[in-house]
Image (cartoon, rainbow, N blue to C red; front, top):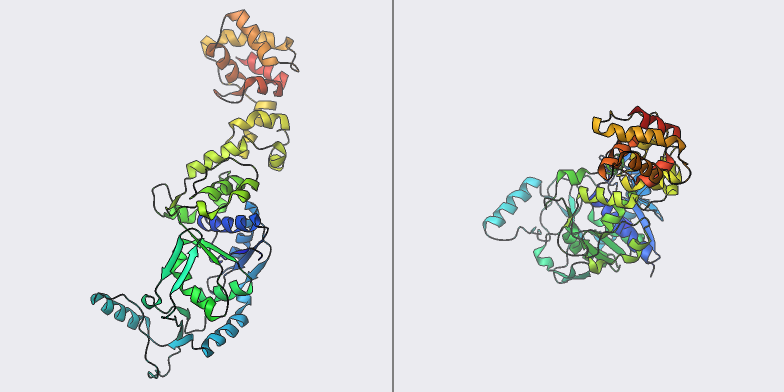
Amino acid sequence: MTVTTRFAPSPTGSLHVGNVRTALHNWLWARKHGGRFLLRIDDTDLGRSKEEYVEGIRADLGWLGLDVDGEERQSARFDLYEAEFAKLQAAGRVYACYETPEELDIRRKILLSRGLPPVYERKPDGAPVPDGIAPHWRFRLDHDAPIEWTDMVRGPQHFDPKTMSDPVVRRADGSWLYLLPSVIDDIAMGISHVVRGEDHVSNTAAQIQMFDALGATPPAFTHEALLVGTEGKLSKRLGSLGMASLREEGIEPIALVALLARLGTSDPVEPVTDVAPLVEGIDFARFGRAPARFDEAELALLNQKILHHTGHAAVADRLPAAITPARWEAIRPNLATVAEAGEWVAVFDGPFTPPAAEAADRPVLAAAAEAAPGIDWGADPWHALTGAVKEATGAKGRALFLPLRRALTGRDHGPDMGELLPLIDKDQAVARLSAG
């Protein structure tokens, strides 16, 4: 059996971290098993679906490195749905209903007031059909067939169909709801594994019988705990945190992938620079039932750690030309985002005006300005410079190093000066020390 997974977003908005996590886990599972990862655009809601969101979904998956092996669009498959619906209709597994939403709501309240579950009550065969009202359609659950499956995260699942309402699968205007087209597509596309959030568990219970009614074996199901924010609950921020905003914040795609791959598992989140260990390590048996907490601060910190291990070639197309491989190696331990590298161009090559020196620091800078012109910049200029200044002034420790760092870089903290100073233009350095 070829492992085939799918990601099935609705193009009614942009992707956010929650559904990106779903896409990622489907992709990782397919890649681990040498299988196929398919994109299915669930655009049956023609009124709300927009092409700009389809393009955005493709772009976001591309940015994350989640390559797809095929794409389908539900709006191009209506003929298939009609054919399969006709089979179910002939078999008596879908039936017409005529209640209005108001009637259903009243009946639901009556059942609840009697202490009964608000399960839809089927009309008896031969019930009169109202004139002038187009029906909506429900799938007839088989009350004598217990629903069971072994979930790859939640373990054995059991549902009694007698306690479930027959789900509506088609509206009165002929448009489709999610449940039935999804099953028809999963069969036609050869989906072997469905990985999605635990909010779909009750959908799966109904869909299990739809697969059976259509003569197909259901795929393996995995229902993951949902993402929550640091406060332990779903938040508007989490639901709206899209890829565009993360890109603008300087988050590397591999950082988001590395975090989302492990959230909710017992495995540590690690600063990887390649997806290979994430592909190898995906194991739904290691996912827990507790909500997975997504922390933007954790993502930012992971982003920094990954940059500290990222080679120049991987980011060269996003760096100023002045940031050579050697300069990148020197500054990357102090970067939070790639964009920050641009701030170091002036430090390396100017123009740069050092901050005004404090009176106590001026003797150190004067000695440095005198010694610097004679130092071999191609050897170890930092230790030669600090050695000469120490000998001339007696300064040591912070009193020696901080004034020089400030004058040369304008910062109190930063990269190792032994690595940084040889990369700063010598004339620029001498001028900065003399300005003090």
